[in-house]
Image (cartoon, rainbow, N blue to C red; front, side):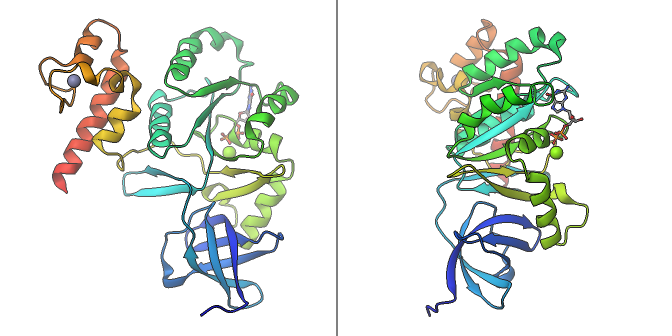
Length: 302
Ligand SMILES: Nc1nc2c(ncn2[C@@H]2O[C@H](COP(=O)(O)OP(=O)(O)O)[C@@H](O)[C@H]2O)c(=O)[nH]1
Ligand SMILES: [Mg+2]
Ligand SMILES: [Zn+2]
């Protein structure tokens, strides 16, 4: 039954069972999901029913343009919906994890979302030479890469990032300590204050960094800040997602002897040959093998 108390809104923060939604006119409400389902994520457009002045219930989730997932040891969970771009922040100090970055690229590829990589802290100039081959590799993998220094060159950082973030919904991810919050605060001047408001509304107390939050950015853009995490699990990907998300594999499969080659133990495998010839980075092949074996084992269990 349609009542005039039904409206559409954007989910702008989630924490456990709590959600926070915002209407186009800027009004915000605390929301609960009908049936206590945990299927709503930041970025979702939802149909709400007003139950009191400040309370609404989420009746329905509108179809999503995109949905990015990651897994941890326990389960696969969606990170954010309707995003146009994933921006991953990394730096050489403390230290970055190649596999984390490669996995994020794969997850974005599987969700059909373009990836922007922000190498921060370029003021550690001693590291610039050593990180260069990795940056070149990321570009070959299809990511756009920019290098900034959010604390020592804030204006330049803003100038570089502004056009890349304009009119897009960008999900910010990264291992903790890389400068994600510094970059968010640079782009969204009142992010700290808005974070406090979210925490208050969601009764988060001091655990502000455990929730995902939406910040409007410019006219039509937004930045979605996710909690820093150390692992980017890919249990949700199939062997096919993995093969097609790894260009070194994808671009050579047609030369394998068997059309169903998994590039592990099969004879006449073009990928293994390219590894032996030094055309494929050994570390990247190990990365592929690890993911492929995990995908094969989990599909056997199902
Ligand atoms: N040297 C240097 N330090 C930075 C830069 N950006 C951030 N930091 C510092 O790195 C630390 C972690 O930054 P933060 O934004 O909290 O990282 P987050 O955990 O990814 O949100 C803080 O001490 C920042 O001041 C940078 O460009 N250069
Ligand atoms: Mg942070
Ligand atoms: Zn093969």
